[in-house]
Length: 63
Image (cartoon, rainbow, N blue to C red):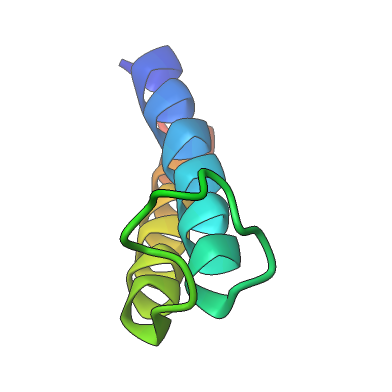
């Protein structure tokens, strides 16, 4: 279960960072994405990345 939490946590962090970059307009890829330069997606990305961090921390504490 520890490995699963780590994998999901890392995926959530990377996806959250991607959403934040698209939402703030730092990453304008793909060109047809509805998330580009939409601040609400930057907030959702921040929340998802925070959830991923929590999962990683919990995985590190599990025995």
